[in-house]
Length: 481
Image (tube, rainbow, N blue to C red; front, side, top):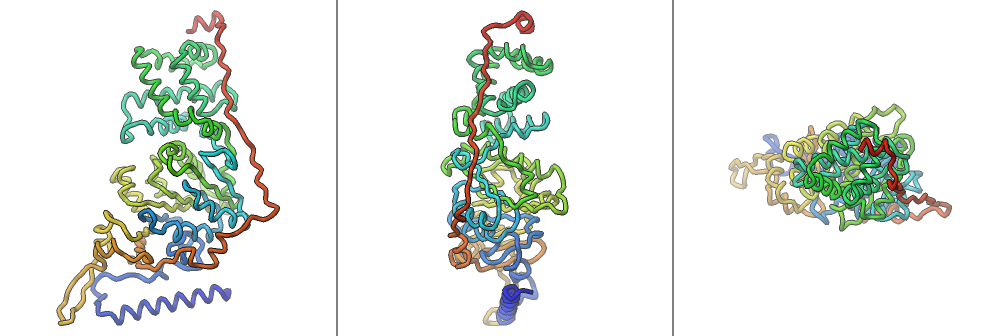
């Protein structure tokens, strides 16, 4: 055992002894019911998983059982949980980082530690890698998933009515046409939007395009969709366009999604960090493309079990409530089998209930083996009071009484340097926390400078569009139309 590790071990044992002494000296009769567990039963400064208290961490195996952090805005989740996790973890990560705060504080230290670092910034091309959902499609099911997630953003409460379902069909048809009949450089969502605009404004051009190039099964599907009444057809096209408007009318996003320079397989072979950035004030605007990214990432992760020498992957989902992943409950339940750990950050558990419904929200929370609650919560406090349980004690007059280990009001008004940890299988923990800026060694990491010889030379791409010229239509095509 190294000297540093031995010193940490001694401190943890001393802390455990102090905990035991405080229990023995208190007037509470903990033999009856509730009491808090020692931190050392769950976390250690020597572990390499997610950070829980700012100084102590889960093991990688415990992190694979998933972790949820619930904290109001400004509660300290970034400084106490996320940044110390980044400074400690020694395997690949993907980090949802809308504000860029995590990137600013951790990128340089990752580079000096030998990580390959990439940033996917949906709001700016400079310094960003590229992500194209269509380049990752392998079958019709993948097409349908992308089309559904695009349309979901324009549906009410995620409910698919006739118009939404027809929009999915139409977008899926256009994607299928591009993948089946055109070169790869035209396989991107801005080109799908372009086809839909032409279908709305110059339908004869798309009629001729499909008649000339589409395989028979796609031609029949196209005729079926445009065979509706004029008003119905116009409504379907308008609905489909609305689902793609955020890309089609945004040149930066059109370009960023026109190519793909991210290799998910690399995460298993080389220590890699991918930051996902977007303008913080436009979370809802970018939520659709962000959700598609995460859906395709987890589909890749779940496509095959990792090999013995494959790296573990940690996922930090800051602003989890801004994402809509239809399979999130299944992801939390099964990620551990694929050596993938997830840290989900919420401002309130109600965000999960609103986004995924009561059943799925409970499934997600139940499959997070470690849950951390910061001060300032509201709805969660009553439930936490029940979870913590009660204990019996004798008052000053010797009368036996019972009270909650912590009342809902005590939970709501916890000191800012305290958190409640609810682990699976052991008693709750009431722990002290310490943000990174009060730890000199972590402050030093946050101020790491880039090596002088470091260069970031990234290629630049622009969306390319089909030249749809249908001024002359031969007799065979005209007959098919």
